[in-house]
Image (tube, rainbow, N blue to C red; front, side, top):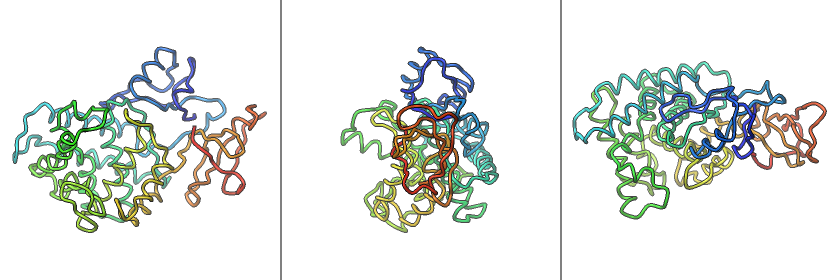
Length: 360
């Protein structure tokens, strides 16, 4: 399969990977043949990338961070919990979802089992979901990235659970904001931004009222918009005053937000997002934490279509953990636009004269 911009999709193309609804259920499954109506509908739902079947790359398959079933169940749990809270009046100091802790402890346990079983140390987030599902899938993605960081730092079981619960529920305060504010595309006014920023304290208040959720997990909701230099909110904490769990979740939050399609801007490539993180080192984020994070992120995920400096078009076939910028690629089009007699591969770590110019 190969990953392509939806603008390159044509009627008759077949999906190689499913597209998810906001609740984690499948909207269109793998093997579905696209037509004009499907393509138009997917564009209207905010989907910008697709995994498509391609005979020249049929043996190339990206490794998902977690199993599809795990992702579906996790997204469904986040969707159900957040929608339940949106429909309930605020109840300060009272646990309004008594099963929340047990539910998300089980959800994160499944995520960790999948992460521990992985052979590939590099993570790429492969799920394609509708724009309306961003809030729910985003929480799952942040939990995946945070789990990888916890493993990299050697956290024990208790620490992993505290981090994971905080990661899955860090944005739960968004359920206390007006829906029209959450979905607003145009720039926020000063008053709207002040209201938006309250979601950190709202989330903290929801989580600390749960008897079976750690106070440290609740602080992830409170502190995930604090910044290393003290420029964040709500308390303008800096450096080590921000709990490491919250720093990890903040990194994962920004990375996944940048690499997801949003109504007001285009999606960043993983390379662009990582460059942004490094530029924010010791300003927004602890530089050492960024270095640890980026060691485990696939800069050019397998199945990504790329343009080489030679003018050739290729698909990433294999990542090299020791040279993240230099994957092995399979050439699909020569510089003159012609297909090769047979697909062939180039290992960029052995070809210093070649580089990837951009993703396509």
